Image (cartoon, rainbow, N blue to C red; front, side, top):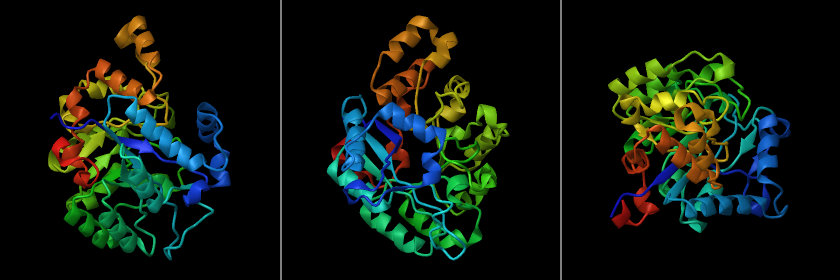
Length: 330
């Protein structure tokens, strides 16, 4: 049996319906990215919006060639005492909801988020270990997480013991959410957890955002890949206005491709029309006719040269897949 095809980067979201515990800040609802995504995905049942969104993710997986997708949670920002800071937090998709959704929809695999600066971080992490988390999701510049903080060593020790990786947004700016501490996205800050043996996945292959004047840390990332065999990247969230020129370059780089796992970043848009020079008008038109944007994302990357091995590499990187996927399929 061929290994499963997994999209390891899709986003749960919610407003607090269905006893989900999800929360969205007024600050975030005023951001243009939030308004555009809400417009694109339309109104939902006011009483069951969170459950509907989870069901939609599962449905899109079922209607694609993918077998599974990792559904990501999102933790808040915490102050120096380890208490939630609602004024700086923008969204919360709590770990219990992530696990509940994945038990309900076998197409989804849990990727909860635990901010290691919360005072109960080790307890929450242990719940994720016991629950069978495939990864832990961090967005340092938005969540106020400093990966280089030496006090996090116990957190890292437990992750290294269990083999659960951190999916970390480092290298480039964040667009969907506001950055509360922009300096925390510097790629060098993940050196400490890597040295502690933690498996890391750098989202978006660390690609700089075009209009943010980010320094290009991809050359540094490639040196880090040589040094740390437990460092990986995903190719999510690149075929959009913020990063699109990088994708064809990454797809032709054998060093990057060899350490890449597939991710769509859904519901962030993924479009082919950025690549008319590489794919031609007919190729672009054929891809844009694919209505399921999870499948379209797969096909865009395939057309640009990513091998199908990227789609089936997740079992080498993620943890606890035997808890969610029949053993014969792994």
